[in-house]
Image 1 (cartoon, helix red, strand yellow):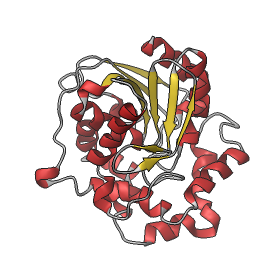
Image 2 (cartoon, rainbow, N blue to C red; image 1 turned 60 degrees about the horizontal axis):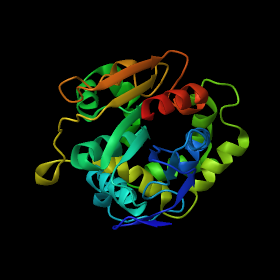
Image 3 (tube, rainbow, N blue to C red; image 1 turned 30 degrees about the vertical axis):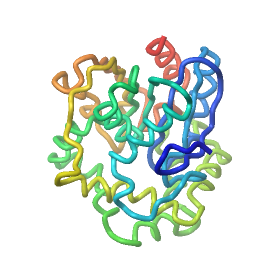
Length: 277
């Protein structure tokens, strides 16, 4: 367990060398980075994959406000400090990208390079949410604003709907074994975990007013790896925009879906090692 100030986070870590933080999304946990932990450690990096706040063995604050992107970004900064580093490379997928983009904006002095996997820049995402096509893909975000019902639905029949997501969302046969799926489901079983995970979406809808995070330019080198067959986030969302991220390189991967780190783990590892170099 690592104390990052506001909460404590359970982490998996491997290797020695420059610090690389790997941030998971919904409904994952740090286990989603098992291929990348090994690959980065073998390449000479200290790879650290936390269970984000609210997930699995990490602290589970009760208030929705404590799952804001500002709080998530502070957790990332706290990890950099806790591991005795001045700066870190960051890899992020899905909701981990929300934390990572915000971390890059609010704590630029703690970031070295940023690698994004199927996680749109907030400005890009807001723009595309105006389209009917993306609204259809993101319908669940609006359903998650309801109290209690989303948790009940996801937990129904021993998490049947989430099991189906893991079985079908990856394009590589066997990317998620039954043991892998059980590991992910086990991470969602602790009391309060589902509510905490859904509170990320509830807090995002409350990112308004004086405490809202306003977009800021990110000048760090950035790599965007995008699985084009993502059924939740269309390929047009890969582009963060040169106004906001002028030093970004976008690489589309036609044969991968939302869980690109599982569909093409060797490609992802090779690109990360080359980028972090």
